[in-house]
Image 1 (cartoon, rainbow over the protein chains, first blue to last red):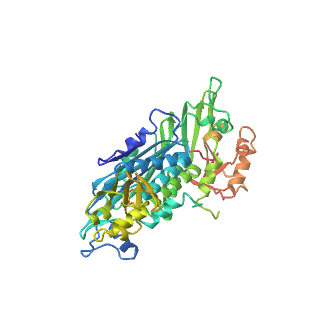
Image 2: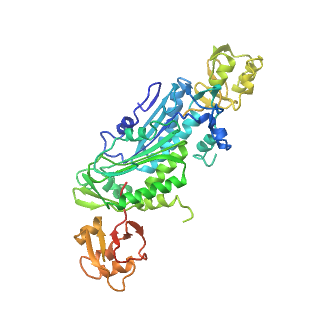
Image 3: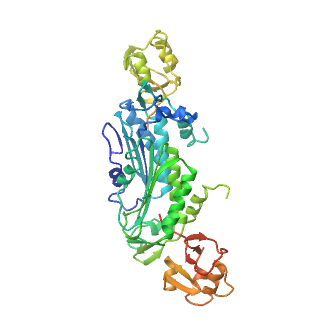
Length: 168
Length: 168
Length: 84
Length: 84
């Protein structure tokens, strides 16, 4: 099974190893692990020059809950992987996305791609992440000392996904 | 220790996990594992349209020996990692490159990069691999049914490294 | 056949419900028209009109607001996605 | 002080040795000139002239053939690298 949406944590090393086990044509496995950051809610302030610090800073992320659209999520991820397979010469692909409540430092997502060559593996892995960020129905709600807060989609993610289709 | 040149195998999952353990500011870990392919020696023929097959095909890679330049290898890898740190906003970096005799399916190299954001992690990881391929003193010798054969450097690797310096 | 409508994330919370089932009103043939007819119910349904960059899916495929809707479809409304 | 010269990979095999130590000959001040003086010894040393895209390092830094060499340096000659 190449796609999983689950509450449980995953073992990135075992998943990466599984993509080349028993075959001798895999020369490259590129992978990505996304994790919960404690400082995400402070991002806007930090980038505006106000470093998070001190007792007055309340934008600390204590936890995060991931909601998804059961049924559509899997279909969307499958479509993204199929699109990657059409664009690059890749073998196995593994996508795991966790849902439910996660704490800072917890793993959220794994994308791992095996290929003969590193360029295809890297490109497909980054493509899948960019598309997942903009096309797979997951939503993050952060718990901060100020209360719950749905994460806003970032324009930079739209740009990241858009660069794979320069003609669009 | 961020750089290792060693005969022993490595545990990619443990290395990836170590880059975010005990901290809550790592949002992204991009990584790459390179492996020994059995079909490498056939590449030129395959790309010329002659698929490897049958009893007459002798370009099968039975094993590979990796030679390096002790002392310089570590310095070269450290310089590459330092260059990546100057270009992207990254935290931990882990590079492991194996030397000695390896068999098809064996892991050769691991590059893993932690960052707040996935773009920096992906870019730095791919940059380090591209530079490692052209600037770190390792040499591969393949064992094939025809005898030993030093692997030729590929022009595509020079191009891959060159794209990080469009002005050059 | 009714249309099944799903809401997610902040929109689900604003509406106080995750789903709704209704007979497709006469003259409503697109996702956008369905959205407008729901939003016209007043509070809290106006969140369907005010959610920034509202996204929609029909039968679990992301679509634009001009996509057709017919009886029996599963229609979903949600904010831009933020996984990964 | 001698210059220590190292050879790697196919070049090491062609020369039948991994290293050489010699007093820097008079008038030899660059990596390229050192390479030429060694290659001029005849077989098997001409491999230093025939190795395609020969690379060099001085004191474990990759350099061009015009780089200076002085007594006490560690000079290495090798084919283009193929790790990773």
